[in-house]
Length: 421
Image (cartoon, rainbow, N blue to C red; front, side, top):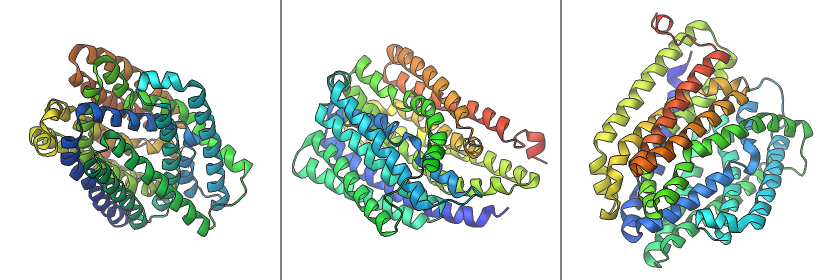
């Protein structure tokens, strides 16, 4: 079980790159929070939420099949497989654009965004999917340096353009949204050119490939919808139950919470391809070692969440302006929520490997609905702190339910009497 070399080498690169990328928005926070009001941050939060909402449907999660396909034993044509994924993306995005065109006024009422920005949000989700395909390929082929370079270039250009438009041209929230959108369009265009030069895109799609992707992605749609309830609907509730300024404070707190999220995401991106390969050639003794390492990881991320939570006041004072001090009591819950996300990511791949993605969907839609109801109740009772608590509880429940299910479909020696032998 060669855990110490390949995994930790890749993980180190991912961690360094992710923290380098994470530093960029954090350097922006002290500046933007002094040029933008909580209300303007709220508009930005809603745009990002709508992009995530559309992103749940653009591509129908077919890009996830690419990672699994790389570690299948059967042969496949990468160019036809990627082209089939892009074809699904174009079709699904066209349908969403049509829905926005027909029901734009309804979206405007509940989001406060104009139809123009709704169209742009849909196209941003389209661009993000294309970039995600490229990142998935780099991840699956163990190319963390290329992965890091692509993400870093995207982040640095986005930050530079956003700061220029907000600080120098005083374009307020619109400057930030233009910065986000323009960079995704630019980077996705370069990715397409790169894929064409690599001959990964061809004017041909495979029916078998499309069936394979849809067989993977469609059962995940309830999971995706549940994930929306779990991860983004709290912002809709904050805006509609409280106000858009509260949503801005909530978004600022969530951005600080990305300190831990970036760390667990970095390790997960290195761990995912390693685990997929390991599950193809596993043995019981190595299973026990893997469980021990996983428990150590759980302890580490929860400890980091505790430490960061204790430093919440200092983080907010340093990173945000006075108008955002309402974020201080939210942070400890957000840090713990991100710790549970990291723990969830360590166990969900056992299910993904078996392709029984409908199980993930069942759990996510169930937990998502619970979180939605819990968010509504706690926000009405406790305000913003209630939103943060509900989000944390949702991530915790999601982790435990997924952990139990993963052991049903992919047995591991999780019980202490086995793991501690």
